[in-house]
Image (cartoon, rainbow over all chains, first blue to last red; front, side, top):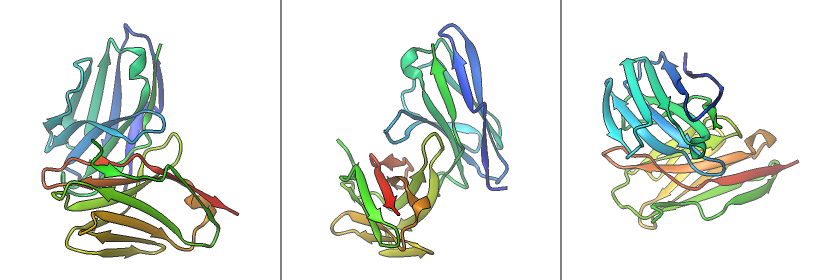
Length: 112
Length: 111
């Protein structure tokens, strides 16, 4: 299994909603990441987890809350988002933080 | 200030010919470089990487060249195939691990 699986694939939410994005990998990778990608731009790093501990938070607003329940799962909890948060949210994992990352297909998020 | 630059937003190449995608960087602390390929509405797919201790890495049709003195790397795809049409991102990292991405180059393979 060399996949990073993200659910849901698409999500439409209102500005008062609470939702969660999920990411799962079974490659034994100990580093997991959340990226945000806007159209025609490279992915922007949001959070890095290393050995289930948050190691990097790229000044992301608190309406985005990551959670790493175990080494295979990574969640991104969303609350009170703004329309400008609409984007493709990508999860990635790697063996360690300094090796190549493998990406999931992403969740296309639309905030209305 | 862009630390990783891909100066060509797009590149059009005839099928069967060589595609050469270029990437320049400014931070001499970068020690690991990666190329990713991305189709619309999908996550990037890792293609090939190179460590700063090497100047060339080859994997099938893909070869990455690194010129440290010029702070330049390039991805060669030969022969180019229609399925290679995608956006290609160059990324670099240092020992603290932060993937710094280029803006991407859209590669179009013409039949």
